Image (cartoon, rainbow, N blue to C red; front, side, top):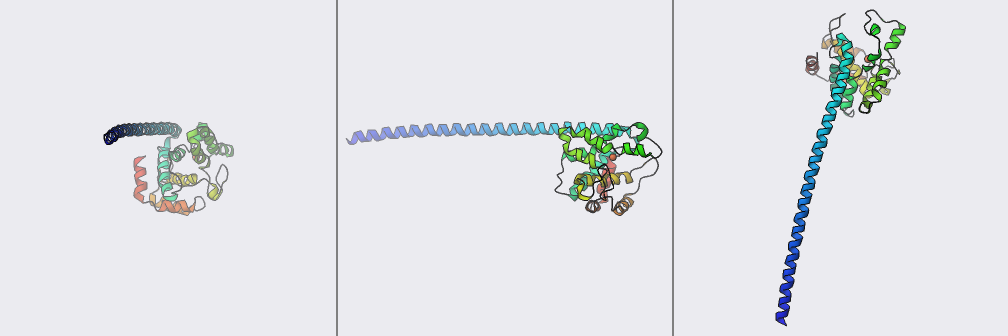
Amino acid sequence: MAVQSEVGLIDELVRLRAELRRREREAADKELQLQRYAADLRETFKQERARAQELRRSYMATVRALSNAVEARDAYTGKHAERVAAYGLVIARKFAPELEITPELEFGYLLHDVGKVAIPDAILYKPSSLDDDERALMSRHPVIGAEIVQGIEFLTEAAEVVRSHHERWDGTGYPDGLAGEEIPLAARVFALADALDAITSDRPYRAATSLADARARLRGAGGQFDPAVIEAFESIPDERIDAIRARAV
Ligand SMILES: [Fe+2]
C-alpha cells in the first residue's frame, strides 16, 4: 500500500513537473510575442514620425514656394516674408507662451501677403500714391489671401493671420476694423514684426533705420500695436534681431 502511494506520488510529481515546464514554455512564448509586438509598435511609430516629418517638410516647401512667388513680384522687399516670419516667431515665444508655436503659425507669417497675387501690376508697382479706388482694391489683399488659403486644410490656422495682418490695436486697421484683443493673437504679433522689418529694411526711397531708432518708433506707435507685444519685443536683445536680419537679406 505504501509502495503504491509512493508510486502515485512520483507520478504526480512527474505530472506536476511536466505541467510546470509547459507553463514555463507558454510564458516564454508569450514574452517573446510581447517583445515582437513592442518592436513592431516601435517600428510603426518611427515610420509614422518619419512620414509626419516628411509631410511637414513638403508643406513647408509648398508654403515657401508660394511665398517666394508672391515676393518675386515685389522686387524691393527681398526676403521680407522670411524675416517677418522669423521676427514674429521670436516675439511670439516671448509674448505668449500659450500661443502654440506651430508650423501653421509660421505658414501664416510667410503667406501674409499671398492675396497680392490678385492685385494688378499697375497698382502694385505704381510709383505715385494710389487713388481711392486703387487703395480700396489694394486693401482687399488680406481678404483675398484668406480666401486663397482657407480651403487648404493645413493652412486653416494660417488664414487667420493672412486675413488680420493689417488690423491695428486701436481699431483703425483693415479689413474688419477689429480692435484690441478682437485681433487674433498671432496677427497682433505679426503686425509689430512686419513694421519692424519695414523700418529696418532699405527701400528705394529711403535708407534703413537703425534698430535703436526702430525700437523708439515702435514704442511711440502705441495705438497701432498691442502694448504687451511691444513690451515682449523690447525684451529681445539686439543681437537676436540682428542675427535674423543678417541671415535673411
Ligand atoms: Fe499686407
